[in-house]
Length: 239
Image (cartoon, rainbow, N blue to C red; front, side, top):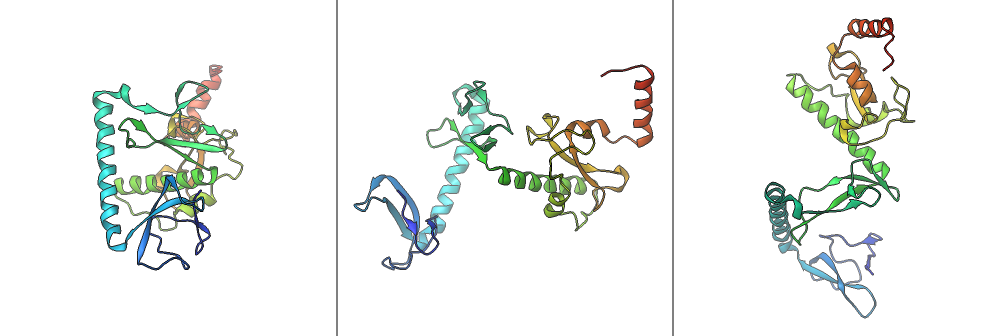
């Protein structure tokens, strides 16, 4: 069992100073040791000199980079050796949007664990997943705006995108419920795009819709879309 930090009311995290009540030696918290228990039943703890904190941080970053490079190498040379957490219902890898016990699958990470073959999974609550997609959307808008040689409208922010997102998750164009999924590969996954393509990504010209609706809309002019609809109706196209 992990001892709770009495100063925060939460478990200790790396870098926490000694709490009031502990012997003050200037050290900071490093990690819990779950393989060893103290007499009071708590996991033993490792504390390090604060001067060692940055060295430890650097060492961990270097180790993580080695794990990333190893995963990339194995993906190229021997992908079958990599071990992924599989969906028990399909026997295949999880895909973004899969839900297990209220947690949403966000993807497999870009490194392996210490064993050199296991690829960790990333899961999130619905709230965290939604926030992630808002951040991802604003990042994509910034990237597209930069490529167009334009300056991002300062009013277009993560909070703004969240404020215009349909609270009931219903696609305003096609009228069915949207779900976060495998990026744009899932046709009912939400995407944000311009209402009027000629105006760019500016305040008041953005709309959330399903990937299917966005793909149908594309960069076409309204007149062109109307012509397509008229043609399909004239030829009794059922779809």
